Image 1: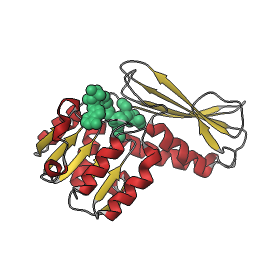
Image 2: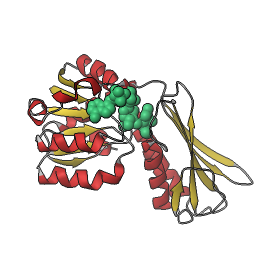
Image 3: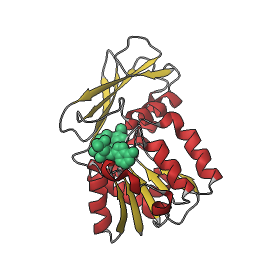
Length: 238
Ligand SMILES: NC(=O)C1=CN([C@@H]2O[C@H](COP(=O)(O)OP(=O)(O)OC[C@H]3O[C@@H](n4cnc5c(N)ncnc54)[C@H](OP(=O)(O)O)[C@@H]3O)[C@@H](O)[C@H]2O)C=CC1
Ligand SMILES: O=C(O)C1=N[C@H](C(=O)O)C[C@H](O)C1
């Protein structure tokens, strides 16, 4: 496949390495120093685009790929207020779109575990549930996209919690997400259910960025010949 990489930072570089190992060609790399190359005409030469820039630029980049009619995999977090608009643009342009807050296989299994645990814990009101996410200090958004996905999965099953808040909270209806920034943490997520009698905790720790990058390339391989809106559940069948 011919891949356009939009965003050539920590993730862009990790994705390039995995894509080359898997026999793909990187035909366009867009970083902050060559934004003039980020054109519909250039993107059109690719089979698929992979976007990892950040919260400020993701929406614009994703829509540009859709206007080019090129399937786009997006891993940027912190821009989801515009996710519905992006989906509409995908449908209008008859393109293909896959966003995931986390592309690693391990985290996607962790998502399934989180949903099941939330279901099991729902009747047990004596437990309070809270989340912690730990990332490197260069991270621009808080809470992490992964923590938001985990929180939404819990809110879906837990009738006591009404919304997530990105701070400690003593309000029963608040699902607290604590964000810690410690170098060089690539990404740790912890869900704790605590009661006066005992605690239950599940935790995912990324040791490096290889899992995110591999998942993004798998998603691109899945998406390049499709039309419509997809998720990592479609890619992994979980
Ligand atoms: N879904 C997932 O599995 C994962 C998602 N992420 C997310 O991916 C995003 C990128 O992460 P990461 O690679 O670590 O961050 P980096 O800051 O290392 O890389 C982002 C790069 O994009 C560049 N950039 C900024 N604006 C633009 C633009 N308009 N066009 C092209 N390039 C641009 C930045 O340049 P400059 O630094 O000069 O601004 C930087 O080089 C973040 O939102 C992060 O949360 C990260 C890991 C996994
Ligand atoms: O910025 C990061 O580094 C990461 N961002 C994603 C997120 O916000 O959840 C995924 C991963 O945890 C690393």
